[in-house]
Length: 167
Image 1 (cartoon, helix red, strand yellow):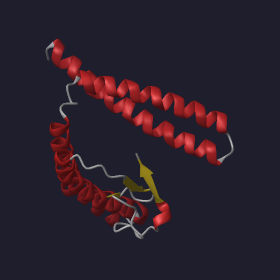
Image 2 (cartoon, rainbow, N blue to C red):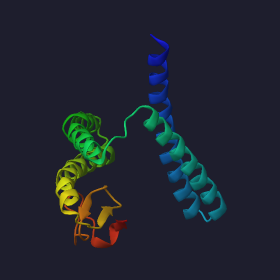
Image 3 (spheres, rainbow, N blue to C red):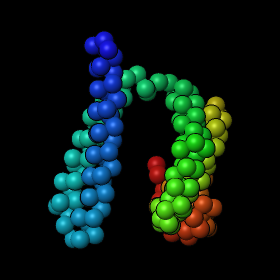
């Protein structure tokens, strides 16, 4: 393996590690907040932000971030692939092993990912029309709705108050 190839593989591995650390630390921050440790939560969020910076640097060096139009197409393809190829066997395995909570979580993620793909497809129209629309994310399953929060999540049934607006 040539040096440039090793570096590229190392950048990929480093990105995965930073992305995992970012999310893990945000989870730790939520737990610290629930337990009444706001300073520890701030520390976890601060280091999570640092991990985000590292991960984005690695992505830029990998030339993964391109024009918005190319990024929308790549995101659409990724969401479709995950919902159609990655999650179905995960759901099946969890069901076969009697892991109902995991099966539900995988199913929710699979279904939300297919909705995400549709949002990416529609986003090109928004770009061309320069239309701006707020997005609302279900905090139970990850479903995303543009415009306004639905009364009930079409994926998991969560009520409107479980949606958070993302600006």
